[in-house]
Image (cartoon, rainbow, N blue to C red):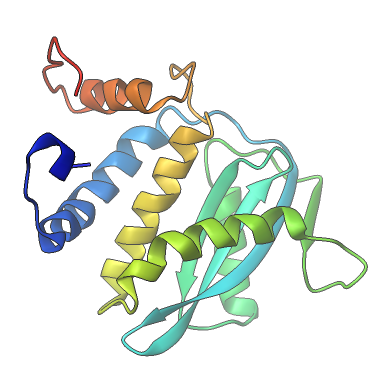
Length: 181
């Protein structure tokens, strides 16, 4: 996209932008998140950090809206409890009526498995994160942008790239140019 506009930007510059702005955008976006429903799907997948696999716990509701994620070094009851506590303390969630996990073979949890693919596809270019912080911030950015495109925010009526651009510009008090690239 940048080359089409005559700009030459190195991947390390984009990396630095993601590390700096992903947490800021998530903070701004969290204020406008619509409430999720009370039917949750929880699952985990793996992300490689410093050559070791970490566990990426993710939760969505039955409308496929992202609730949150949690990156952990362990896959045990303590990590699951921390993640569930994090979910229950979010201001845009209701107490769940049901939580579907993939541990029970009688459940089909394909709804969330499809969303793992999106995160995996976006993170494959990173190949191997060099620290927990860089992995967390990158995934934070990916999840936040996905929330924007899924229309999970109040005041963002249509989740087109142009509307998302204007929304982010307003949140950071950036001047909106008269032209669109």
